[in-house]
Image (cartoon, rainbow, N blue to C red; front, side):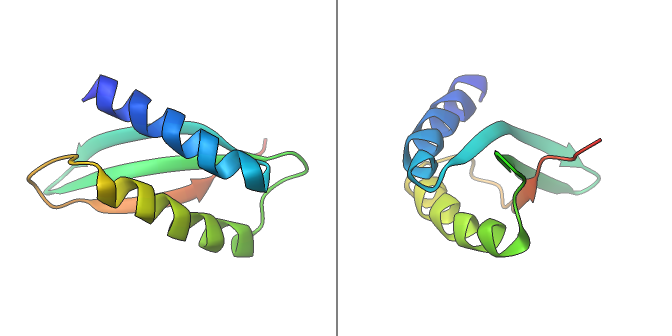
Length: 83
């Protein structure tokens, strides 16, 4: 799974770089009865909700082409926390 996530991150970075979006992290984890594929995005100057929505469509297209798991999962595309 680690290699698959690294491959997805690389592919997403290539596609999202055109929008100046940085793929900060990708994780696949089980929380209770659910599996989550979390993609953390960032952008210089911050990333707003509209950009996250647009990026989610791109992320969906890339992820749909990959065979991540036979189990169902929730795709969670979020912005990197600022602190």
